[in-house]
Every structure is written in structure tokens, then in C-alpha cells.
Length: 188
Image (cartoon, rainbow, N blue to C red; front, top):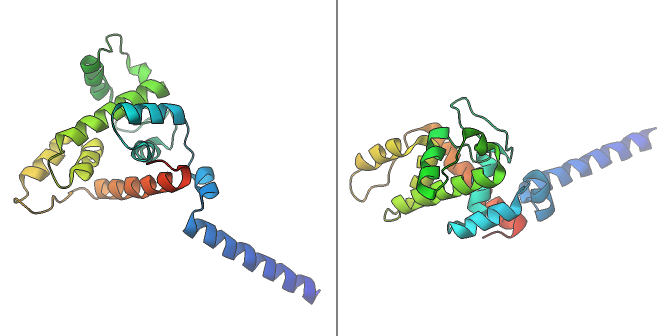
């Protein structure tokens, strides 16, 4: 009985150690299981089309919706990239989507296309700032108006302080997940 109990405790300890290793090291097979890359061909196509890193686009989608095309936020954002209907309408107007309907945001292809367009536009807007990517991501999360006020309130040469804790956390998650998608899927 003692031997069985000893063997059982050893097995549990080894499984626990293996589990800790997997969670800490995040080998590629674990990453692909834990962080799926659904709609991979759509993500790759729109990342290429809008000159975004596929790993960044995948990280934003995972952070926004965990790749759930039916996701809806309390603020009314819809779909994989959690776009507000007004934002999507503006993108449709800019890109020739004359027949746009809010329900279109549940379509993964259209949602990723519009979200990639919007993210690329934000990155272009802040391209001359040393914190360009962080500002673009902050604007995606907290709105351009907030980020523009933060930039305007920052003395020249000083880093822009992201005022919302939720947005700071959002940036950390996106950056961490971008690295995860780079390692797990070889996306750059």
C-alpha cells in the first residue's frame, strides 16, 4: 500500500512539474492548443494587405474576442476584432463598402478586413511618434480622442502616459500574445 501511495505521489509530482514547465516554457504545440489561430488564411491575407505583422493581428483578435466571431461587448462592439458599428460604417464608406449592414460584422472575413484596415490606419496616424505601435493599439482600445489628448498633454521628448489601466493592460496582453503567436506559429 505504501509503495502504491509513494508511486502515486511521485506521478502527481512529475505531472505537476511537467505542467509547470509547459505553462512557463509555452512550447509550440502548447501554444497552438492554448491560443488557436482560427481564420488563419484571412488573418494572413489582411495582414499582408494592410502591412501588419500577422502575429500582431492575431494577438489583437485573440485579445478582443478569443477568435469568437459572435462576440459582443457591453459597449456594442461586434465580432472578432470588436468593432463599433459606427467605426465599421466609416471604414465601409472609405473603402467602398456601400452595402454595409451592422450584421456584416459577424462575418469573419469582413470583420478582420475592417479591423486590419482600422489598425493600419491608426498605426499610420501615429507613425512619426516613438511610441507609434503602442499609441495605435491604445487608440484601438480607448479611442483616438483619448490618445490624442494624452499625446497633446505630453511634453516633447517625454513618453506618453497611457491614462487608463485597462488600456495599459490591453497593451501588455497584445504584446505578450504577439510573441506567443510568433513562437507558436512562426508568424512575423
